[in-house]
Structures are given as C-alpha cells and as structure tokens.
Length: 330
Ligand code: PHE
Image 1 (cartoon, helix red, strand yellow):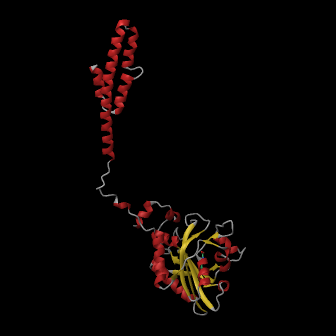
Image 2 (image 1 turned 45 degrees about the vertical axis):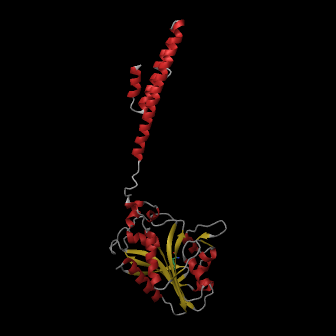
C-alpha cells in the first residue's frame, strides 16, 4: 500500500498522474489484477478479501483525488502566472497610426489652391453618362471614351472615371465666375505598377467672362503649383488632346530621380508627366448653357504625385496597408 500511495504522490504533473491512474485503476491496472485474484480465493475467505480490497481501493482513490486537486490547482496558478498581463507596463508606442501618404499629398495640393481662393466642390462617385461623358464633349461612340477604362453598372450608370463631372455639376448649379477644385476618388479598369482601379484626382476649373482667361494664366498657375509641390524642377507644356479642352496640354516636370539625365523611372526621357490641362472647349460651355465665358481646367492624379514625392516604386503599395510602408510616414 505504501508504495502505491508513494506512486500517486510522486506524480508531479497531471500528465504523470494520469499515467499513475491508468497503472492503478485502469482495466489492466494493479487493482484490477488484485480483484481478479478473488475468483481463486476459497469461499469462506472471499468476503473478507473483497472487503479488504474495496477498503484499499477507497483509500487509494482518496489519495488520488487529493493529489489531483493539488496538481490541478498548481497548474491553473502557473497558467495564470504565465498569462498575466502587467497593465502598468508601457505598451508598444511604435505602433501609433500615421496619416496616409495619399491623403497627406491631397492635403498639400488642396492647401495650395485654397490659398488662391479656389472653392472645394464635390460630386457623386456613381455618375451618369451625361456628367461623366456627354457634357464633357465625349459623345456616345466617341473613340476617346476608350481611354477611360470605365466600370459600368447594368442601368448605364458608371463609376466616375475622372473628377471632371464635378466641373459640369458646379457649372450647372452656379453662375460664373467659377474658381473651384474637386478632389476625390475615381475608378478605372486598370491594374499595374502605375495604376490601381481606384485612385484620386484633383480637378480644377476657372471660368470668367470671355477674354478674361487665357492659356498664359493656366501656364503661370500650373508652373507655380508644380514648383510648390516639387521644388526646383523644370516645367514643360506638351501639346495633347482632351475632348473637354482645346487647346490641351500635358505637363511634365524634369525627372526628380535623375534630374533630367534619363533613368528607368522617366523611361530615359528626363521628363515625368504629372498633369493634364487646357482651355475649356466651347462645347462644354454649350452643354451647361454658359454664354460669353472663357476658362481653363486641369486634372491630376494624387497617387502619382505621392509616388514621386516619396519615391514609392509601385503605386499598388499605397493601397496594400503594409505597416512597413505606412510607418515611414509618421
Ligand atoms: N479628366 C482628365 C483625365 O482624367 C484630366 C483633365 C482634366 C485634363 C481637366 C484636362 C482638363 O485624364
């Protein structure tokens, strides 16, 4: 008996104790073997033998239960100790959030135009054909619609492909003069290192009496804006085409990576294209029934600016939410 008791009390963990339980109380355990001997005990002694066995079994069971309770309690205490959280300790202060580089760039752009008294206008992201295309001199079946990689809804509505529909909405609801920017998300079916299906643009529109607005005004303000954004860079206006402006221009800055020498980022041209602009086409003014006015408009991609400002190699990284990128903008 004493060795059996010792066996129980020597178990130092619940796993060890479980082994002891099987050894003692299991089907092939010590006690079972003792009880098996009962059949060989002569009749008159059977009762006493059985009583003895049951008494011993009860003693061992009590011993076992006590040991079990003790070990169980110890195990819980150890677990609590191991999992304890010291709430008085400082947390990881490095895990602070950061303003997203795209939004920071957007704010920087907005600040420039707000300082020049441009109003901020807004419009719906789900647009109709009239505002996104038709009124912008993009009639149905016009090949220039292909440039836009549009997401269509079944009913003919679209996810706006640019912020230019906000120009139309603003002119339809306000009288000239107009001096506005429209920052916001736009959508195109496109996905590669310089395109994501959702990105942000800032649109600009200035309208005043006929003869008041010239290409020189547009050129001056775009040059100044680009110097504000990128510092000492060369600015170049290249003839281009947009259905809603005539004449139209794409604007380049000298490559900020190689300073115009030619590198991979600028495709060895020394120039980086950063925005589109032009003199508002008279067809656009006709669509909103504006008479005797002149104006200029421009549009730019915010992610492209952010990418250039912070030298982000793949535009898609801006939307992956990887904290290793984001934590650099704290
Ligand atoms: N809406 C044009 C685009 O998304 C940009 C633009 C705006 C060009 C205004 C000229 C004038 O590509």
